[in-house]
Amino acid sequence: MTVGREIHLASRPVGMPTPDNFRLVEVDVPEPAEGQVKVRNLVMSVDPYMRGRMNDAKSYVPPFAVDAVLDGGAVGEVVESRSPDLKAGDLVLHGYGWREWAVDDARRFRRLDPVAPPSAFLGVLGMPGLTAYVGLLDIAAMKPGDTVFVSGAAGAVGSLVGQLARLKGAARVIGSAGSAAKVAHLTGDLGFDAAFNYRDGDVSKLLKQAAPDGIDVYFDNVGGDHLTAAIARAKPFARFALCGAISAYNEPVPGPDNMTLMIGKRLTMRGFIVSDHNDRMADLIREVGAWYAAGEIKAEETVVEGLENAPEALTGLLRGANTGKMVVKL
Image 1 (cartoon, rainbow, N blue to C red):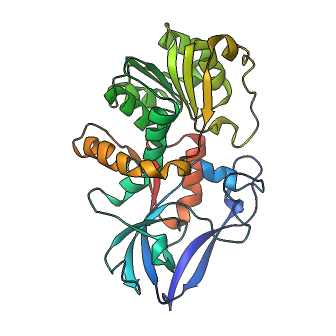
Image 2 (cartoon, helix red, strand yellow; image 1 turned 30 degrees about the vertical axis):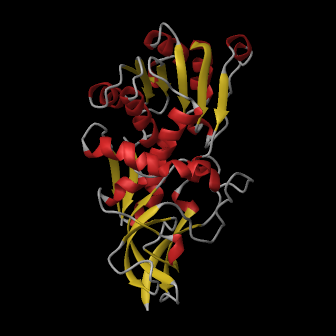
Image 3 (tube, one colour; image 1 turned 135 degrees about the horizontal axis):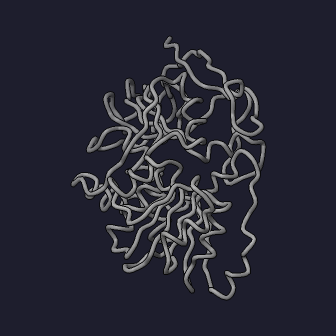
């Protein structure tokens, strides 16, 4: 029998997760039953939403269970199949990350056309890509001529939002990030018109300098002071897509104290969950896939080697140590 490794949640974190909250475990990997496949994982994803699942709290997805394997997006290769739908050698996308091997019904694995590296299906052509695509175009209803502000703009979602806005005809694209190097990446590599390091001062003042005429669209990955600043700089009838609030994932932060401005400005603020919009995946693959293949969209990755380092990759993501998509190569 194959022996594989997987990461279990050892305890629920208080604040930033620590190594003690995780446990590396060896398990026997069963052989596939009729209708099942056995998959060797090649690369797995770590994403900000995973921090929320480590809490014992009701949410849109169940929390991770203590003393059980975590899960998340992964791409692997089928090594054994007892299903007519998949064959050995197929590349598949699935939700059984945080482990080296996965065995389950074939219908839980989506065969991929290997038109891009495996990790791309966890980033630009996967869930983060769909989040950016749907959030900007459907939730915020961005239109040509808009001024667009993206927080967390150097991450997997934010970096794609900014590039999509540029390609879709935005008049001005502005991003925030957490270092001078990331700011240079946004304006130099990704084509943002302006960007600022939120550690350099008051975010409201920094955004006012970058967007003196205001903003039409805000794509929020951060919450807190960024959301406050966006409300202050919003033009009448501006639209906000609320994707995440990473500033508050490990400890509470003050929320906006200027919500009354939303009334006079007639703002639209809408939260969304990407899994509600899987019907748009084909559009993402068609449109963004073409831009990606042509080199018009760049998809930076930060790669961590080895399953045993997946917890460190997650905490690094929460600290902002990544540029682009954070992935773990198995």
